[in-house]
Length: 428
Ligand SMILES: C[S@@+](CC[C@H](N)C(=O)[O-])C[C@H]1O[C@@H](n2cnc3c(N)ncnc32)[C@H](O)[C@@H]1O
Figure 1 (tube, protein in one colour):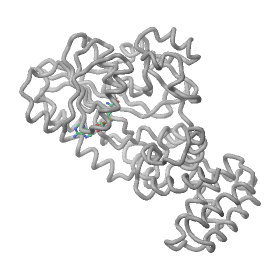
Figure 2 (figure 1 turned 30 degrees about the vertical axis):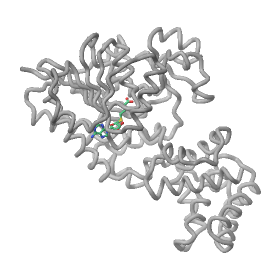
Figure 3 (figure 1 turned 90 degrees about the horizontal axis):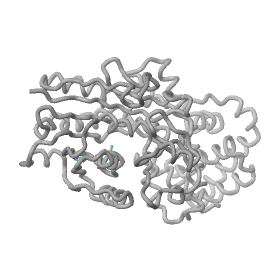
Figure 4 (figure 1 turned 180 degrees about the vertical axis):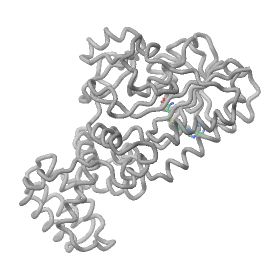
């Protein structure tokens, strides 16, 4: 157990100091067996979900600023406090493990300090649990949201985003049948929602390629692209291919482009499992557009690289590592790609622009600037009816006809990621 916890200390440090996604950091950790992986996930994700309160607790017990050499001790304290307050690990196990780890990663002096702090937290844990503030967002993340949302909305986002998400899948066909086979709930737009436990690869239909993992909100972008059977569609930032699969499933002839070779490798594996085919191109979207000599596409899907701040339910570390300047940087890149896209889209063609960002800089505001610069493009409003045959999804459609999901939407089913989709038409 203490090997996993030591790996957890190292991973936490890597995420927070190098601003890496936890999922990326985890793939580098060879010490963790697949059996231990579930515990490591739970420990680290719980720590990120409660880190704001954990830091407040530690402030009570750590009065001096720790020297740089004691930094491993600080990460051990984050994880140890999470175990005491949220995972109900026996006190002696928490104290012994993190003291040993700190001896190994720092020195005896820091280990003694970790020992003293964890002992004090154990003594007061019942009172501390009552003081829990359920705050998820540190001030820097609040600052990102504050650009676009009022305090009440941010409060709702925070409460909903802190909850552990379920597992959503998209099926090729016969969603009601698969919902029954897998024991899942059928969401209004035919996504199936499963309890997030067990191995995905062992579920019925996975090996045969009957479905793929895709959040409810992420699946909406392609649903807003009607009548693409036999049409040429460019999926401009395609990997790992969730939306590519949807496009092919709708009968389109798809060119799947992405700048990242390893991510395209993943896309190829996914398409192979699903028995789907696409033209796969590894290129920078900007270069591709500049040198493109073929027939303009009937439709372009731009699922632009973004801050991923809409996925904080699944990636709670993002609230601790993303800053407004990261959002602004991504918005610049999106703008560059988006503003070149008209060159490869035919007149009368449809452009779907989407991001998994909660920031309007990467969504609504990005589209407003694009429309100003490209008056030949018009918004084609998306409706709840076309997404689900009724008005069940009215709460996620904005006045302008964009999709804007927030974590508190779809509350009856357990919430959703935040996502933005705009549908535009290039007119003559
Ligand atoms: C949001 S992800 C795409 C997710 C994908 N559409 C799906 O549904 O599975 C954004 C993708 O943009 C790619 N990307 C980033 N910069 C790019 C560029 N300049 N040209 C092409 N692709 C780029 C990234 O490698 C990443 O795979």
